[in-house]
Image (tube, rainbow, N blue to C red; front, side, top):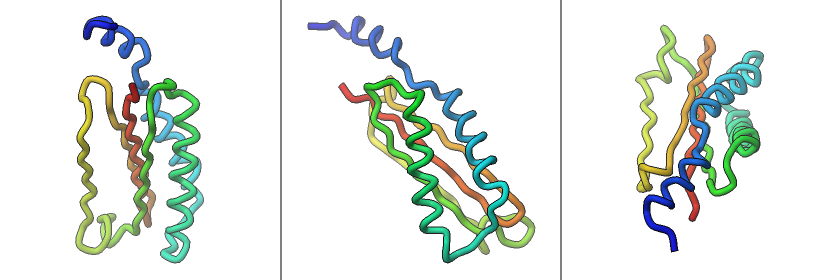
Length: 125
């Protein structure tokens, strides 16, 4: 039976690599989307594919005890580079353990679209 101190040492030795994952998201979205233009009919399939690709990519550096939830939002930029025509605000909220669980997000922007990828990493005991 572990005390809370021993459990914290175990968790910290397998900490989720937030900085590395953020860099991976930045590199991935830039390379994957730099030649892609906004097309409303193809957004659904693209978002689904990007979400699966992000999850597979992050899994390569994720400690085994973490479960991943990946979301991707993609939209058209309006006049003067605004997100949508009236603005769009993305927000998320979860109940979790602030000592072990975390999230990483990155937004890619081109002249005509934006794409936000979120990775939620939840420690599984």
